[in-house]
Image 1 (cartoon, rainbow, N blue to C red):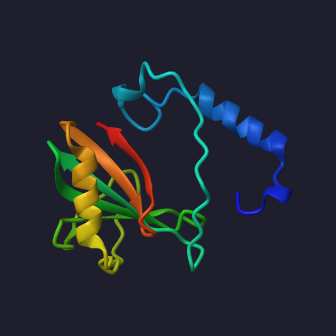
Image 2 (tube, rainbow, N blue to C red; image 1 turned 90 degrees about the vertical axis):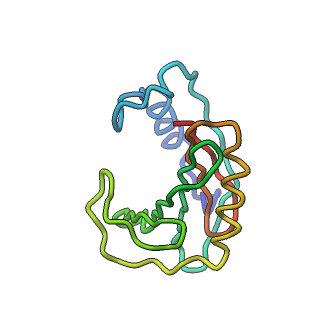
Image 3 (spheres, rainbow, N blue to C red; image 1 turned 180 degrees about the vertical axis):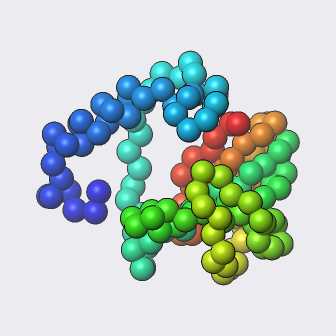
Length: 143
């Protein structure tokens, strides 16, 4: 929420209740890791970006080692998604979004993003570590 004074608390409650009632195990595929989780809402600090668009870097790790990175952006318009290897070569695939031909510039802190993702991935056979371009840690999802 960018401006709390403009927040419609009743609309927020309706949206949160809808999220709580959604079974995410079957929402966007067959993700059984969500099946028996009691839903909770976690509020995070608002992260503002310079151009009002935040790039999310989702690092896919296997046994503590990063393997590929998905970048998501333009969420306020029409969400875009691209995949890259660890050397920032664009990979020719996508998931539930049309293939995007745009090339995203390699982040200056790519090595740090990979290092942090691998540290957070220790102990998980397969996990996705989500980081923002500001370096803020969002979540990691055992897959």
